[in-house]
Amino acid sequence: MTARCRPDQGTAKLALRFHFATTDLPMTSPDSSGTKKRIFSGMQPSGEAHLGNYLGALRRWVGMQDDYDCIWCIVDQHAITAGGDPSETPGNVLDLAISFLAVGLDPEKAIIFVQSDVPEHTELAWLFNAVTPVGDLERMTQFKDKSQRFDSIPAGILNYPILQAADILLYKADAVPVGEDQKQHLEMTRDVARKFNAAYGETFPETEPLIAKDVGRIMGLDGEAKMSKSLDNTIPVLAEPEDVWAKVRTAVTDPQRVRRDDPGRPEVCNVFTLHNFFSDDATRADIDAQCRAGTIGCVDCKRRLSDNIADAFGPFRERAAELHAHPERVREVLDDGAARASAIARETMAEVRDRMGLDWRSAIG
Ligand code: SF4
Image (cartoon, rainbow, N blue to C red; front, side, top):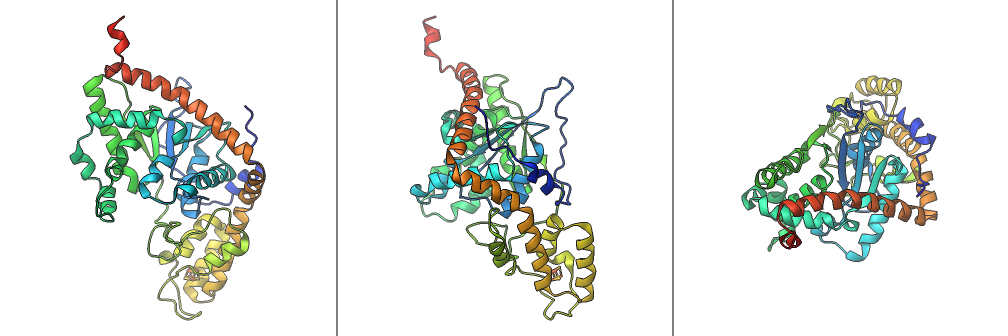
């Protein structure tokens, strides 16, 4: 299959606009034998990706594709634990896939697929139940948080980390790009691998975390919580310039700045944090100085940020428009990705079934 959705030169131009170091990669890949380390990561489909998804994950993923053997997954089976309307899921998957391709995930460099297209994920998750203590699952911070929202807690909320371990270990991933809040989940995956290997023989690697360089906490535009679509405190990555402005103009700034000539503190202002990603050194130095001196208004400062975001996301919008006009190209990418992922998954599962004795024909010989 020929993937036709390759990132164009827009991505290269865009890269110049981001001024923070993107990623801290502690692993050597390719290794001395020339073999690239394998990376797996997934994202739940809640439609078009937003700024938080982009800054926190997607831009890192784009930067890893040349050095690593990357597998990017749309984890629709995880999304069902959040409830929601099933009739919206297919559209949400398609929109996230379009966002993936629009921002520069490249099917010629990485496997891009949808979790439910590869049934081995859920099969391996079931088998991992055999080596995962319930107490470990109950201690997960995310379980404690999420379970508060239910009168009767669905088992999927508890077992979520087992499916996550299966996602990663099905491909024997060497590493997973993680943020601070996902470290505990990866530790669970490593623990599942250790327990499985101890019970059934050496099968899985202990997947390493790839920790991003500290870029400061990126808050939602409300200044109160992490960016999230459901909190409506973020910006869709494919938003038109006027929609970017409609969002950025609402952003919370330094609360001590009431009047235009009040001296401000860029270091506590989330708008300035975002300038760090989208504005060049000279612009940031100018804003920093003018903010402290009280010679620039927050509206002007936000306008500069909004223009830079809209400008940086321009190539994404163009590619997405093309893909919306030709969804068959997205289907082709995801079908091909599922076939490539399945080939790896089948191999792992043959080994796992054999080790776990799920092979009755061997009794006949
Ligand atoms: S001028 Fe810019 S950096 Fe300073 S407080 Fe206002 S929005 Fe924040």
